[in-house]
Length: 74
Image 1 (cartoon, rainbow, N blue to C red):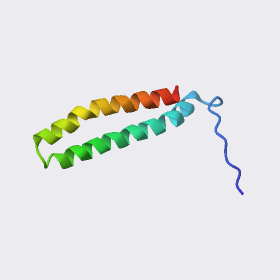
Image 2: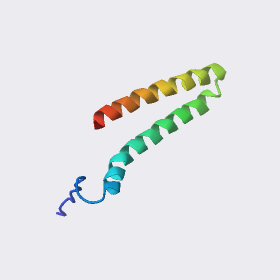
Image 3: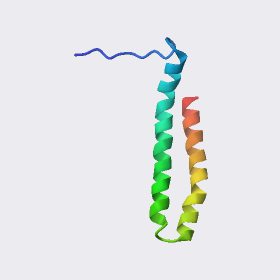
Image 4: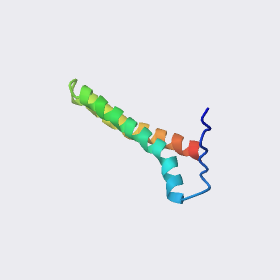
């Protein structure tokens, strides 16, 4: 068996530690934005009211997700 490499965030360069902590959050935000864009694309075929509903829900949903991830990391 290959021993697992332990990454200590309190040792080494600060930039490397910050990047390793930030990457999952950045990836989750990219996925959420892509989800909203795909919803907007497909709902655009239904009409302006459907697109307006998705456009209004995006900031609220993003705020809730940001608060949740911020509290999780705090």
